[in-house]
Image (cartoon, rainbow, N blue to C red; front, side, top):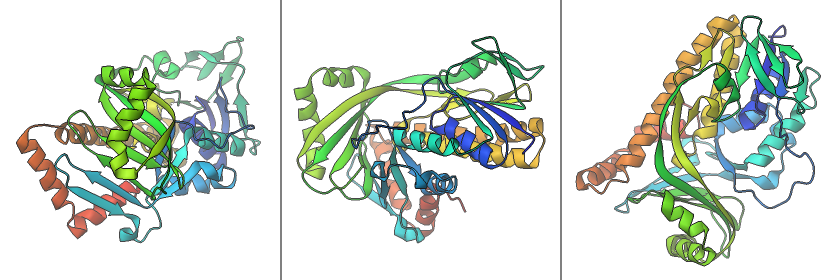
Length: 381
């Protein structure tokens, strides 16, 4: 690994974590990001971009040194996860059932990205490039050309630059996917009553609604609905407050809206993750998933861990081939599961609703429930 030069395009959570993991393993890393995080001047208010990181991935991030520098006011452990069907049947997964203190953490994306960049600055084998961008790619010479005409060589080029990946465009990567015709509404609120260390989700025909705990008296409320409905709420603050009050107040009591935003929901999966024996896509560059189970960034971190493991044991091209085979299969499996759940559990068909209730009842069986909790925290027996 010490003779490996890794060029990474994109310094968000997945790109910065990739850079940190490879740097710690001894590789020379060059990270390109034109909008780096501000390492100073972070506020105490939670941003709306929040991720649920499972326990296994959080422990891995801690092993990279993140816990020593992250703003702990932007991290919240959660011990329980509850899902409720349309008919009102619920199932709770508790970390104590698998002898763990938590299932994972809620973490602000900005805080995690900032912590990763702070860690990167401690490595002499890392070069952070913020003033130039990658313009073109020569896979024969394994070089990228930058905006100022300079060239940078690599052994491995990683595209960690999101759903509109430049690296994917330069490698002519094709995708399969569709638009869900839904938006996800995110609202940070302040509660009058303490909020438990529990994340929960309730299913409805138009889409689920959910809560992510952020602190003792702050939470992120999530609502999935048709695109037009969410947009109309965003344009009328009074209507938004009324809508959220009717939906959430029976669960959590009175609250005050702090900020709100929404984003469209799309499914997108690269037909190939790797190309030319030296280029690999990770995270949202390779796959975009329905966010209802909070699996997006967890799949990205799993991509990194798999690729790092393969490159530690194989030459570059065989390692990339093995990475693609493993992660494309696992990511596709999770994407199909999310689609099946969000379609069947939203269905107004009585048979589909009955099946949802039956599946929830079956999941109460101790052996199956134990297995599902292990999956939720990122450990599969």
